Structures are given as structure tokens and as C-alpha cells.
Length: 549
Ligand code: N01
Image (tube, rainbow, N blue to C red; front, side, top):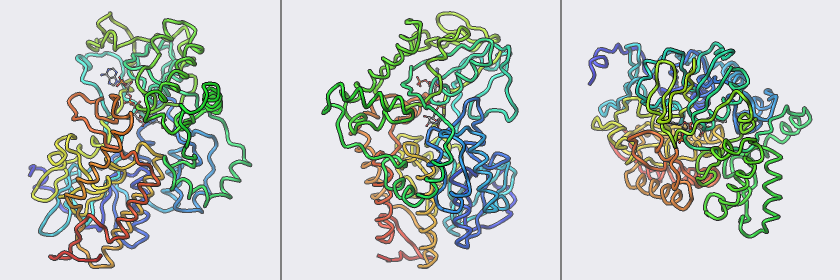
């Protein structure tokens, strides 16, 4: 055990300790506290919000429609809050989460500016000992992680970063005060969802922006707009139906599951459907036909549609050529943008292809690729995250026999979970939107609510039946992981290098850690398992297995 942990000063005992005060942690606290469990949340930031606390980069906004990107556990809350536009900006989402924290008086059980360094399971007491970065420790019967899937920033290990004389930022750790780009030459590395949002906004302010692109992306216009009050009124009126549809859907939004193949319709009909989705804005292209993410030929129809649009929007054919993506559409996160491709028509923007001429090093005045040096005053890393497993493995989590989560998952390659909620060998630990659950390939608040409710119901069940510990069985875990892999392998997702597969982090073992079966199907499976007395889990009273089936 680390020296600091041996010396830690034990300060409290709780029923449940929760990591993180984002969408997951806030609702977990509320739900467990309402059920009478003493619950405490630790949050590294000095406010609530999680992802929306940290991601303050220019242009940050959500790509789920706001009316679906909120909690639905309280009809009163849903009706009290009014979104201003279709895709809200980060400050508005952060205001929403603060509103939730105020309404349910959550702050009194959240300790801010505190990180959990480690959580160790004690087999003698059946409790988790949790070590904080302030040198103290607490214990809890239940250890619940609400750390988010994308909170461990990836700053590539370029040679020379420490020599850069200007300011540099990672988008996921953006300063609270405004970063002034006026009169500045700015460089940005990365053109994922984040880069695509930030690039047009920075370009509008900076003297010059140089974009370093490794992989061109498929984007479709967001066509964000303010909401009509009448539309909002109807949405609130239809709360129950919208909630039901979200929960039973594929992706967590009330979008009908497509039934037609892109290949069974005429090219004219397909073009009409794609054109309509493009004009409407949002993620409509992704869900236009059921086989877009499973059939290469179907996928190519939408990929080619977007490539044609890029060539129409971008005036310089050489720049347009560099922006044409070639991977399977949708197998990296489909992006919705505001003036992304149009930004390359500006005189103050330069696009550099770093796949062709890779980055060699960061220099005192900028960056050098194999083609030459680029100078700028400010550098922005929009280089993404060590997704899914990264935030969990940043903590020293140890289960039975002192086995670490890192050892169990072999750093990623052997990641096995039961439902993305629990791990064999880690009793009474629950993950909210963990690896092998629908998580990031769904509308997050819907998946978060489902996990929080399932976990809280489970804890209440345990209390009611005198169960001391719950632990996933190895065979149930193996079967679930196998099922996840089989579903993923039946799609095109596994054929593309992306953060979904771990390919964005050098040396990270590959695997596809998101359950692609859909939110509705997944919920049903979780509910069935609970209804069968938590099938696939071992439930123990103080020393015996409790047969509750
Ligand atoms: O990160 P990314 P992100 N040299 O990993 C490049 C969610 N999100 O922060 O594609 C050069 O997607 C990398 O290149 P490549 C959403 O789930 C949601 O943009 O690996 N380039 C890529 O271009 C999303 O998927 C919202 O070849 C390097 C970029 O950096 C997830 O967050 C908004 C490099 C990273 O893209 C992550 O998005 C924002 C290197 N060494 C984010 N390393 C909304 O809701 C990386 N890159 C709207």
C-alpha cells in the first residue's frame, strides 16, 4: 500500500461514495439520498457539471437536441426548465446542472476540489476504503463511479511541448476566463467533434488559424436555431410520451428505428432522403437507413453524399481534396457542425495534412512537420481522450485479493464487465455508463438515468433482503463481454481506428467497449436480470450466499 494511504486520516463512513458531480453523480446522489442512504460525492472541480464544467472551449455545445438532453426522472424539473435553442451551448447546459443541484439541494453532500486517488475493497469489513487527495480517507459500503467516459485528456506525447513559448490548452481543461485570440496566430491539432466546433469560432477571432488535421471527418450541418415557445409548450405537454420513446429507442432520442435499406431504394429516392436530412440539420443522415453502419455499400452512399457536399462548399479544390474523408461514415462519431467546411474559405485559415506530413515536434515558436515549420502564438490541443477505461484506470481501484482494475482489464485488452455496470472481483462497486454499456453511443442522460435507477433499485433490494454484497459472476461477465464483441463485430465500427476502439492512444490495447445493441434492448436485458433476482450476480449475506431467485 502506498505510504500516503497508510497514513491517511479516516474521517467518515457512508453507505455510498460517488465519484464525480456531473449528470451521473448528481442524480445518483439525489436518488440514493431520497431512498435514505447516506451518500457523499467527491468532485475534482469547484462546481457541478462534469463534462460541462471542464469543456469550456469556444464553440462547445451538445449534439443531442436540448429537449432530450436532460433528466426525465422528475416531470416537475422537466417542466420548470426551458431550453433556448436546439443545440445548447456549454454555459446553458452548465446552468441547467446548477439549477438541478439547487433544486434538489445537492451541494451539501458534495465535496468539491477533491479527487479520489484510490478505492480499495476490504474483504474483512465488506467495505470500500476510499483515499482522497487531501490525505484523508472515508469508507463506504458502495463505491459508485460517475466519472464520465471522456474525462481523461489525451495530450499526445510530442517532443518539445515544454519548449513552446506561447500559451497552450487542451479543450477538456479550458480556463474559466475567456482566452483572447484577437490578433493571435493560433494552431489547433485535431478535427474530431471538439475541433470541428472550436475551429469556426477561433477562426472568426484570431488573426490566423492553422488547422493540423490527421483524419478528415464527415460533418453535417447542425442548423441550430432558437426554439419556438409553442414547440416547447407541446414538448412539455407530451413529457410522458417523449420519455417513454427515449427509453425504448435505439439511441436514447425519440427517433424511429429505420426499417429500410439504403440499397433497396432508387438513387433518386436516397438522394432525396439525404438532402432532406442535410437541410433539416442534425444527425438525420446517420439514422436514414438501417444498414448504414453494417453494410459497406450502404455506407458508401452517405459517405459519397457528404464528400460531394464538401466539394460544393469548399471553394479551393486542393483544400476540399484534403477534407475528403474515406473511412466508413459513422464509425467515428458523426459530427454536426456550424460553418465548419465554410471556415476553410476564409483567408485567415490554413489546413495542414499531418497524415501526409506528420508532426515531428513542438518548437519554441510553433510546430514542425516533416514538411516544415509553422509559427503561432497559441496552441490548442483538440486531441481527444483516453475514452471509456481511461477515467476509471486513473484511480487505483482494488477489488478482492488486492487485484487492481488495471490488472483485471490488462490495461484495456481484457476489459470484461457485466452489463458495463459491475466487475467480477469488485463487490459492491457500480459503474455508471461503464465500458460495455451503450454510454457514448446513446443520448447520455437517458443511459445515465437508466444506470442510476438500476443501481439504486439494486441497493434497495439488497437492503430489503439482507444482502451484504453483490458481485458479478465470472461466467456472466464473460458471456456479456462476448455478446458485446459479437454485436460490434457485426457492424462496420470495428473496421475503423477511433477512440471507440482505443486506437487513438498509442500502446492502448484495442477493443470495442460500447454496447451497440441499443438503449431499449439494453434496458430490457438489465430489467430482466434484476427481475430474476440479479441473475449472473452472487448475492451474499454476511457469510452465506442468499438464494433469492
Ligand atoms: O476527440 P477525438 P474529440 N497527431 O478523439 C486528432 C464527444 N464530444 O475531443 O482522427 C495528430 O474525436 C485526431 O486525429 P485522428 C464525442 O463523443 C461530443 O474531438 O485520430 N492528430 C482527431 O482529429 C466525441 O467523439 C461533443 O486521426 C491527433 C482529434 O485529434 C468525443 O467527445 C463535442 C493526434 C481527436 O478527436 C471526443 O471528441 C465534443 C496526434 N498525435 C466532443 N492525436 C458534442 O456533443 C489525436 N489527434 C457535440
